[in-house]
Image 1 (cartoon, rainbow, N blue to C red):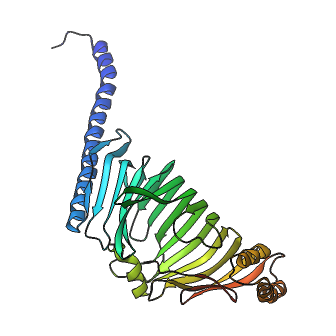
Image 2 (cartoon, rainbow, N blue to C red; image 1 turned 120 degrees about the vertical axis):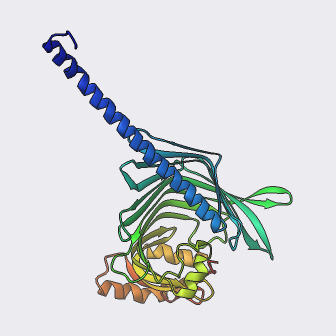
Image 3 (cartoon, one colour; image 1 turned 180 degrees about the vertical axis):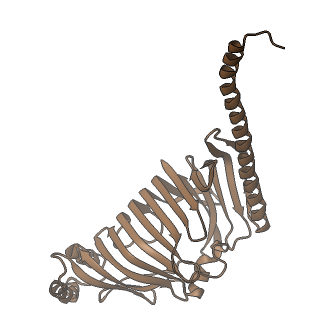
Length: 361
């Protein structure tokens, strides 16, 4: 039996008990956190095995789980995804990748790719498969995914100061084959509510987009100052999203539609807003109709004339009636209501055949 006076006993326990409770709580929380971290790592390894069963190899040089005490953070170095059995084989590589989630909210994941990325792919040219590498660098490459239920999923992405350079592999070694850049690209997507079958609402926004040596130069130029669109994609092909490699031909065969409820475009002489719907025809070319409002009509006409698409006189005659009609219909001063159509591989701006549309696959 202790010989300490009773007051001393009370003082001792009143000092020690809080520390014991804190220690027990910390140990319990730590064990719970470790269990959650192990579940996350096990889920990643299971996903790796599932992809291998589909013919896709997922690998990395190092995988580390941390973030204690508040987050579960996965750091991957030397990440690589190979799809050798795809219709056109491709490989994606990233120097570093970080994914994090709150330990008590695993349905919200934030992914950050701060380092360089490389995409290796091939495409048919001159009767043979040519190999290319797309090198990507950016100040920000970020994505967020929330999965609260089958109809409460949200995907967001934000890319800032993106620079892409394309290199072609030749018998003489790598050859620079074009490049592109974007000041900012943003995406927000979610399943479309109250729609039968898989359908998604997608919002896109791009600023200061430019490219060089990435195909034929369009008369509108190679710089898009601003692009913004609110869209809904419906009638997706069976098997989506498990067959992304064949998505475009499958979408054409299935009649997949992209309804654009609102868009704004500033591309060279084109300053346009509007809405419409587009799909792919049997040859993989865009097909659809849009109702648009066009500003800078004089600049648009000058660009069409300089490109040799239409004569000055024909262009003035073609658009004069539309300008007068737009004024009568209440269009604001300086803007013209212009129907835009894509049909049989041709883009029509009003009555003018403005460009040829090539297949997307």
